[in-house]
Length: 169
Image (spheres, rainbow, N blue to C red):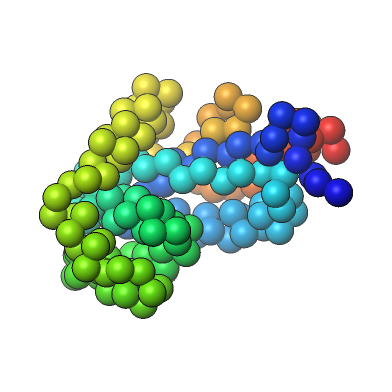
C-alpha cells in the first residue's frame, strides 16, 4: 500500500547551502520526515549559497554533479557533515567526499572547473530570492514558505502539520 497522494508525493523544497551549520543541524528533521512519511514525501534540495560562505557555490555545483552520478543526497549529507573542514580547506574537500562515496571524483573536479552545473545553482538561487528566501534552511511545502534561517524551533512540527493535512492524515 502506497502512502502517496493520488497526485503523487507531497513535495518539500529545502533551500539549503552545504557550508551552513544550520542546514547540517536540519538533517535530523529531514531524517525524521523521511522516517515518518516514506515515499509519501519528496524532499527536493534547492541551492541557496550564501555570500558569507566562500565555498558554498562550489559545493552546490559539486552536489549537482553527485546527483548526476546518482548519489546526490548521500553527497549532500557527507559534505554537510564536514562544514568546518569545507570552510578551512575549500574545494579539495568536495572532491575527497566524492571519492569516499565511490563517485567519479575526477568528474566532480572537472565539473567545478567547467561550470556545467552553474545554471541549475543560479536558477535555484534566483527562484529562492524571488519567493523571499533570505537564509538557510528555508522550506516550501504546499506553497508555504517556512523560514529556518533564524531559528529551527518548531519547523518540523509545522511541516508535519501541513503534510498531514495534504495526505489526509
